[in-house]
Length: 212
Image 1 (cartoon, rainbow, N blue to C red):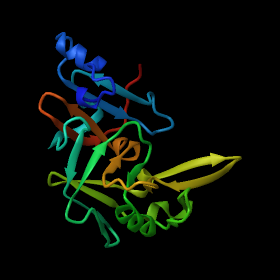
Image 2: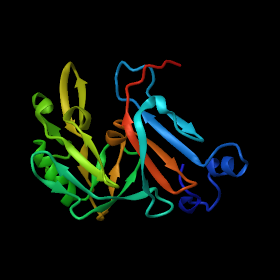
Image 3: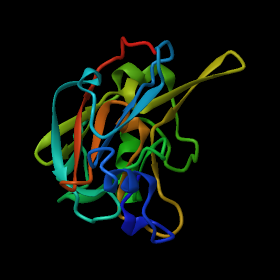
């Protein structure tokens, strides 16, 4: 669902061909549902967005690098007092990533704040602390987008035992300065990608009551 500039074959992606044929508007959007008992796991909408999945209005941020759905984040803060993305940074919204990834300088302060050991590749967190974990906030185009512990901690049950893991991880290997806002962020915020106006819109997701 990217721009043609990001196509490995330099050919039009399917969605671009649909736009050129006048079949859809140059917009697509995602609703991602993490509720285990939810009627649907999510929805991709081609040609627009569906307001039944979000509260209020979409708030937009301009795309800063055409081809990557890249945009600017004003900064980030942790309710316990620490900051990250100090002075601003660049990010992408990526439905192909489960977690929120970033460079160590931005992610390690978050890991310490939520009780995860940065040396632990699994990012294990004490399940008993989830309700008291600090709110993590991203400010995008002067609008705050906050995540609670219940939203950014992955809770899994294995062999009848619950295990909890951080939804934040830092890049290994070659340094990447971008923050990648994966499904941990996108399940909390409905996301619209506007290829016509080169912008990304976010709005707080509401729980789905609709069945298909």
